[in-house]
Amino acid sequence: MDFSDHFGKELDAVLNENSPVSVLDKLLGESPIQASDLLTIMVSLEKKWEEFKTHNVRLAVIIDPQISSMHGEMITTHEFEKDISLILQKGKAKSITHYISSEGHICKTVNNDSNISFDELAVQSKMQGNVTFFLGIKGVDVLVRGVPYKTQNHLESYKDLVKYSTQLPIEQYQKLLNDFFYENIQYDINKTIFLRKEKSAVEWHEKIDKHPKLLPIKPEEIFHKELEKYLRGKCQDIVLSEVKNRHDERYDIWVGTSDNNVFVFEVKWLGISITPSGNVNYKYNTEDRAVEGAYQIKDYIDHSNNYLHGLSQSRIHLGVLVLFDAREVMEEIKYPQDFNKYPNIDLSQHFMIDKEKITASTVYKKRKTEKRRVTK
Amino acid sequence: MNDKQGYVMSNDLLLVALYMNDNGWEAANKSSFQRILYFSAVLSPVFVPHEKWAYSFSNTMFGPYNNDISKKLSFLSAKQLLGLEERHIYQNRIEERFKISKQGINECVNKLFLLDSLKSKRNWFEILVRVLSIYGENFLSKLVKEDPNIVAFNMANKSSRLPTDNSTENLSKQFFEFIKSKGKEKIQLENSTDKDFLLMFFDILYRKYKGGSN
Image (cartoon, rainbow over all chains, first blue to last red; front, side, top):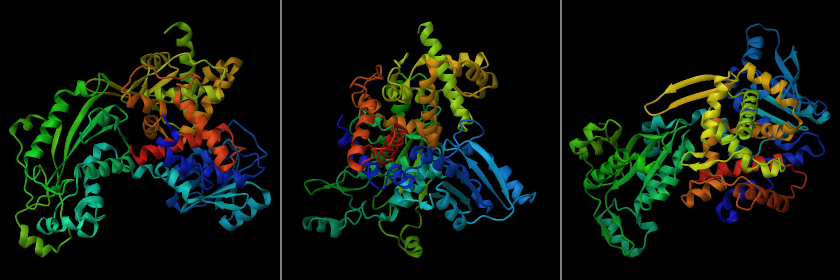
């Protein structure tokens, strides 16, 4: 494996002067605190504080480099609700400061009779050469020897971990697909779904005039790639793309849950597209293509052992046909009755794509009988 | 699996469970134990170079797997060294989540911590679980999926034994060394420790997952 080739983009993003470890190394200088220890505490603390920050109380966590302790409660598992209760309900402190070892163990806790401020902590951190975390309503601010630390790179690296609760489990696939559709596909927000004259060869312009909803070459690649990327960022469960690699030219996405359930998404599109030679492909402009996709899902379900390669601990939990409909006249698809016997196949994820956002009255006049999204 | 391998596996699982507990994990399923022990094994030539890993893993769609680990977790639970926190029965399998018990903690503190032969391995588990705790259980599968050994096996559609030794076949270890040499060359991370590079290793794997396969 050529690492520079396979991980090139990621290596460049991590191995640069702005990477968290590099920046922290420089800020820490001769301090006995190690960048990796600091980063581990920092990210864990940010994750933990997410659920408490809205209480609008202020806490300080100070790493004392003179203390080395591998015992006692870890700050990352500390029950902050007790601190908050002490401040808000019992009035026994205005703010609280925890002193921890560089490994993250709490060594001392001080109840302050006044509120702490970021500026005050910055001065202390600089004078004492320590690392201080300021936990407040906006989240966690970090001061390394008086210097605030927050780089874009740090946010990019770990924001998913801190904001994990915003990711959805694949069981909520209907919401994920719906959000994906409205954020990326509908009305062609990114101008990548339909061919546009300004981005197309002159000899195609006539065809674009004739077919305003003309799709580019191999639209399945766009829909598949965009949806897979979206799920990787927004779904808690794992996209198992290696399954796709075993079946070239199939545009399906397999998602596995932590308890080894597999959800299969078969991506299909309807409409007309341009071919590499500049002709118009009408082959997928009928509902037959959708029915074909439904049978593909049925095949996965009926022969799941073949597809799961003997994984006795797994099973296909649900097969979903994700249909992107870009036809001029988008109508409900009628599937054969065979599918009524399959409660583990969802054929209702039918997304009708409009090229432009048009007024409600125009839509009403033009397609008053159509539904935006078919629910089965 | 012989008796010695079984003994080593039990100790490894208990220590991993202990450090999970120290880092605030509520409990963990069998797959998470498999994945943590897999990363421990593949990077062991860097962090515990004198340790010859006693057991191996084969490659499956859900990542590295050793059936004996699964059985050993149930055994440790039956001996009450691990507590069974949750149990769900599905159509074709049982999902269980484990957490170290008080008895298990005592076993670590009073027996395993006293063994000098386990000291470096203990430190390694502690470092690894701590770093992986940044990600948490839900991200483990995503990290494992982009591990160089797993990627290479998936590309070749191989499900055989994954390399965990100090050979050049162990691509995960090779990749770690690669990051280290590039880091020192590109951004003069001369003072950085292997722990720093471990963070970078997982950071790269997660970015790779999120960026997609293309």
